[in-house]
Image 1: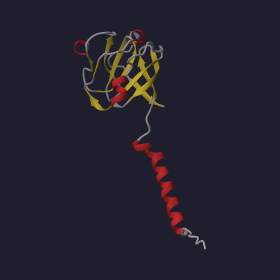
Image 2 (image 1 turned 45 degrees about the vertical axis):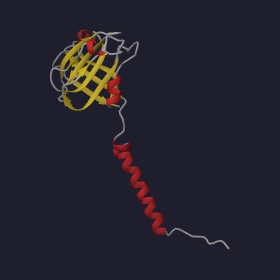
Image 3 (image 1 turned 90 degrees about the horizontal axis):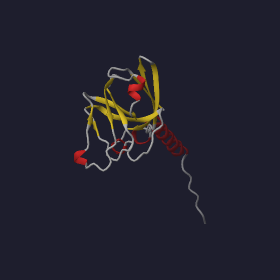
Image 4 (image 1 turned 120 degrees about the vertical axis):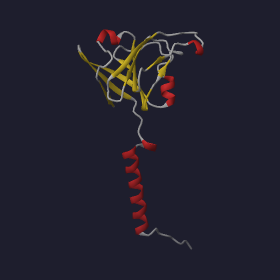
Length: 165
C-alpha cells in the first residue's frame, strides 16, 4: 500500500512567494550585495572638447593590486579606472607594468587633482620603485597611455564624468 502525501496549498503558495521575493531581492541588490561593474566610459571636458576613454574597472583590492601589470599594450582610447570605497590619499607604483602611463587622480567632486607620468621599471626591486601619489584625497584613478593627458589637454581641475556599463 502506497500513501501519497500532498503539500497543503497554503504551504505551496508560501514557498512560491518566498522564492519570488528572494529572487527579486537578489536582482535588486545584486548577488551578495552588488553586481560587479567591469566597464566604464570616462570623459574629460577639456579646452579642446570632450575626450572619452573606454576603461576596465578595478574596484576590488585584488583588481586594484593587479591593475595593468604584465600587459604589453593598451589601445589609445582605452584605460583602467580604479575605484576606491571612500576618498583617500592613494599611491601607485609600476611593479611589473610594461606600458608607460599617465596616472590621473580624481576627487569625489569629479575633478582632476593631479597627473603623474610613469615609466615602466623592469627589474627594479620593490623598495627602489618610484611611488606616484595623489596630492589630496582621490576617489578614482584613471590610467591611460603616457602622453595622452598632454596631447588632449587634461590638466588639474579638468571636470570628469564617469559612466558605468
